[in-house]
Length: 280
Image: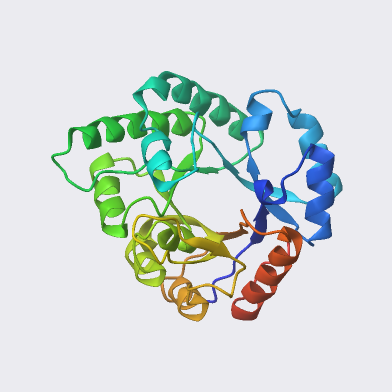
């Protein structure tokens, strides 16, 4: 049986200023599906009905959502290690409320999946912070599950093995992985194809993004246009086919001066490697 995928674009990649602007930019890149940043709908910056009408009017379906925890600082690896995901205790109450709000938004949009960065998960099973983070993750997974929505953790801030162990200890079947091959390189957390092979049973969605490893230990890698980085895309899509992973593919571009052009390049690369469902 041939595995088919739906292809979309991450809404935040296009840096939209309004629902109408997002719909216009998605149309410009030929996207018929997207992953939608939910926080503007939760906090009232965007009206949910207006957003859906704009997207539907452009022929765009929303396939999943994305949540951003409060206070994340991506200035350096050190700042995101401290501020990322659910790690900061000072923001835990706020982040739990964000999760509750985004879960309600996701349900109102009819979404079955939301993704986010959990935060750097400690590898050491005896690290006291690990138990705290796993408890917080269970609560957030349950918040979304209560709304009929699955949660997937972005890859990259820990190795595939660390994430596998965390998922096992979490004991929440509704929790899965949003696999981003570029993040493995950007954070220096392993080789993307091998990581995908290990995490395949838990993968709920894939981000199409490319990067190069940092030349200096402890520094960020460099995000680059898809096909010009260190991800072995032929091998990557080979694993998707081998493991029969029929998951949505979302093009993400968070750097560069020509995101529209880079998204078009990424789309062509994906289409050259796999068969897509043409209804999204």
